[in-house]
Image (cartoon, rainbow, N blue to C red; front, side):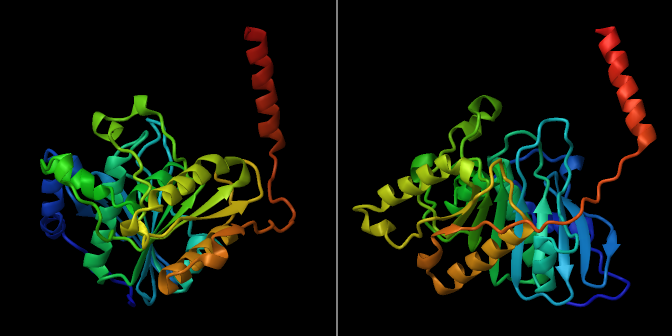
Length: 330
């Protein structure tokens, strides 16, 4: 797709019609804050266009290439404490993973989710809503990858298990005993970076307390994880293998793969590591096998370069004086 200086603007009434069915599924009260609205085009560059908007209270951004290849990546962010604000993260700097993908013809999109804190049910629906909006605007995607980081990795894993169907059915009043989520999810694969597969249940809604992993992902999951955080990931994968044993109906479902990053910390990966993981996941989706890449050292050394940090002597002096004053007050 190629745009000139003017870009088509979608009216809020058209978006409202498109998402009316989804709103009924979620049974949310109508609110001016939750009214779907596509906002102004804010950024145009020679290589991509960025549009922003809001769906069911969740803000989003979409970065478009000059010519779409049919591939779509949606970013699901990690935990944000209350008071952080509903902000959309989308790193499009030169050399970033997303910039590389856009240069190859990908659409890259991200959602803020509709609220802060530990959010599982609504975040799944926000990702699916954004995916549906992209396809309604640009046409059906050839492949859809969700990249989730930290808590977003757990959200992406739940999406791979197609658990958003349970949430939608539950909000339509269908009992859990009559739910069936064994059908193809709306996404093609998941890249879970530093996935936080355990969460505090005292900070989530009653609806979300009933959410638990089924250990039956229906699509490929590639975990990219620092070696210091492999425990929960390995436990999830082993549970998936145990679930498949003796159950012929589950033998066709893929076992997740894990790439270790030999760097300590949480979610500490670089753009090249994530980019290579995305490309490998695409090959897995296309060819249906990940045997040679199921366990891999996914570390890409960070190139040594001179620091670009600068120090303001006046500011540093003010900080030191401030610290001395604080110590005197103590």
